[in-house]
Image: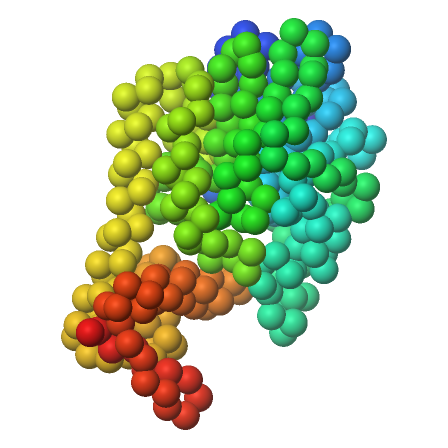
Length: 307
């Protein structure tokens, strides 16, 4: 694939760390590419679509550190066949094979072929069976810079923040602070863990925060914390919408999914129904545990009632 960019690529430098902004500011399906030029090793954090347009500054990478595994974060891996790829143990199976990725997604067998074809066509998807596993707290010495992995699950089981020192740059990945809000609709996602990760994020001592998508780079802590709070507030807003629907009338999970908590009505993709069901189901579990919702059995499932 040609390395000629189809859009102006903005590069922002913080010492040995460079951030290359993807198309439309790194908005999905693209992302923001982080590179660390250690005196010993050139490392890439994830590999979004923009990696295919950067050229030698990316193609010379000797090490790939994955903050988590999703198709849009593997879109440049095909350019680095000989670079070791390190993935948190919670996500490494998804990096190593399509079966592992499908299990992490929760993709139904009937949709597997269509989903795989879409990932291959749009994201140059290819598994990395050689992916190496790391654990929370893993550290890589690159020469005059180091990277430490901080496990922040919820979005995926292995989602991590990658902190570069001494630059103080925290790559916070898909805790992306976008208006869409947190995504926890995969089979490996977990709403409760996401809440805990969001609460811990401000405790990381950093001077720069880089998101995978859209928001990009924060250099002011007050701005970062303000957008983080708005992102957290999305969870309460979703719960309020769900409670509002149940206040109108008791509903089944299928009926709630049809109302769309995450995606706008009419938006269609192979994963939408399952992602909506898993997202709504986790909120219903929390509401039931809090005594706010009860359910009654009926043929084919349950009907949820507001207490």
